Length: 506
Image 1 (cartoon, helix red, strand yellow):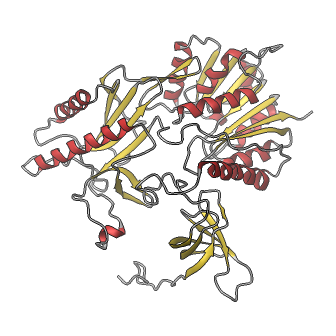
Image 2 (spheres, rainbow, N blue to C red; image 1 turned 90 degrees about the vertical axis):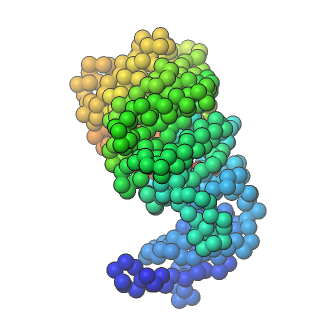
Image 3 (cartoon, helix red, strand yellow; image 1 turned 60 degrees about the horizontal axis):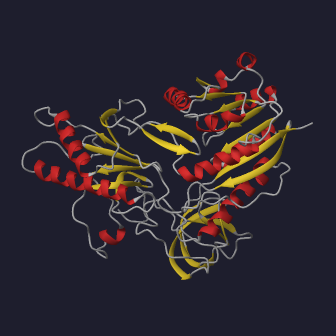
């Protein structure tokens, strides 16, 4: 097919390559931006979004998509690098889709994350704001993740350099690593990832080698494919989750696909595989597995089988411990999570040791496994947690039990259905509401119930400043933004958590 025609045979517009343009800033989704007139006849410049750029770069950019008010492009050559630009640590920078800000110093990353929060609150919320402090940085910027998930595939992604013969081609088509953005059936093979302790690399590479051995045996007559075929929905090794926590405990969850061999010996093969993994890595305190034959990779509706250990790990936060199972949500940066929750408790007026005239009733909306609820419980009269996922609510109750916390109650259901006037009448009027919704933010019905309940303080924790700003605008008639604190949970990415304290207006 001619490169300038699409699959329907229509001629595509030939978009220009721009020479020597200056990158001037960073956009909300982590891409760099430049403002350029594409033609001399254009009255105004348009914004071009450019991945992997740094403010101050002078670059050549190939325009790949053109809309009325903006364009998207990619760097073809760095003519003059920005003084901010540093050498990325990872060999896969620019390919795997993660850690897109490795080329920026960490203190600059924190500045850009703060600016994202400022821009969202000023442009979307459009409310009166206090001075917004610098993003609270992570002490560890590498090896900070307590959870990594990898995909096995029999279709390894090959770079253009390999395809064109400019780079030595790795043997074989099998891979374990990350999906290439925009190509669901191709997986980038990863040998080393800097986001987790080296035990993760050792376990992942060991399983990869064992998969290759199975492939060799398959060539000798065994009918099973060792590495998962995403399009065909078949293959033994499907996904891998590795969870090391600060207590020293380590969970590994291996997800198998179509695991039966020609004699139907699926479980025997799996147990042999897992036994060798356990013997090789005695550091694994809990080894679990899932057999997933569905088309999608989610294990939320699948049975988790315990092969070794108790089936869970325990993480500590302050003087509390939290039980984490294979399906449990827990903040993936353990040490930074404690800073996030300390900020939340401070904004809520629930800092431990603080003398209170009357302990407040606290509602924790979108409570998950109850980490925030249990974290603030000592300073509360009681904490009512609400969460959509029933398994998470079960974990929340367990976490209260193992910490000897008796003043929490957890309820499962859709927030807009559970949180209503009857519920509030039954459980008591909230003095404080802590909300930590998913990226989509709060449903308008939930906002309406909050406005009717009129808690004295709302602490809004968000992983998406844009939807947080939208919701704050809805709360603005009754609530004033009193404090804001961005928190960096994911160094080298554009993602930022933001905590906002809203106070009921007099």
